[in-house]
Image 1: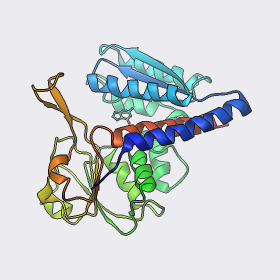
Image 2: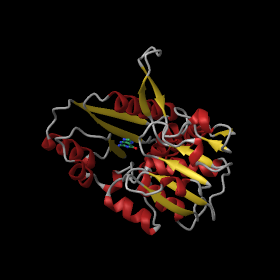
Image 3: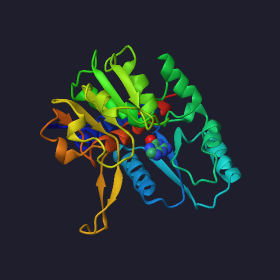
Image 4: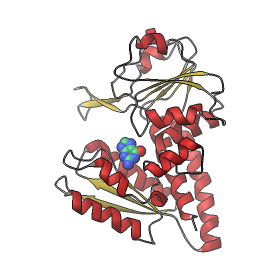
Length: 290
Ligand code: GUN
């Protein structure tokens, strides 16, 4: 089995980005600036945002982190978004999800200026992506596309099953994989919690993208020999033998699948680092906007 090493690939791409940033700085004296908004102290979100900020530093971007407690009001968060929209110094920004329950995630998303929406979550960018127009592509699906391309995994004419229909992964993933481009041109089936006979679908798949948030749900009996598994899940599973009391598990049963599949992403170190790289690529693009 080939391990699809997102961590190593992200490192390579970050070196390429750093060279681009150096050239831009020499030519224009300007460097890309990403701002991240983090609400509350969800441990996983803190780790993700820290990785994003650290990656900005690695490639020579500027970054700003704006933190507010769980108790922040909708009005205050909207004011932060509007300030970032108007700040000529900020090229792009993200509001880390999920937000606490009392906040209206849709209203916050709708308030983000699509020109600064480097997560690619706003209706304008989702619509433009769907029409095949220039846009900021959502970070995780685009990171997966970059990974498939760089690893030379053929998608044209292949059967792909996407597990999970979230707005930020599953749904845009189906758009990118089925569009007329390379990678793309796949026949895509989107499965979700109401799908009947899930196994009938997954057994047909040449490529499975698992983004369902259920630890080790994709097992060897559900997968055909030689399939490719892209595991988006990052689940904390209680494990008292570990120093932190938990281990990280993907949506796929890595150990059980190893001898059956042709290629698979590990968790951690697979899709996660590619998401970050994709965000950096969007930020670089934002900084070059006139
Ligand atoms: N939460 C999980 N993934 C993401 C992401 O790609 N962007 C943001 N903003 N929040 C997330």
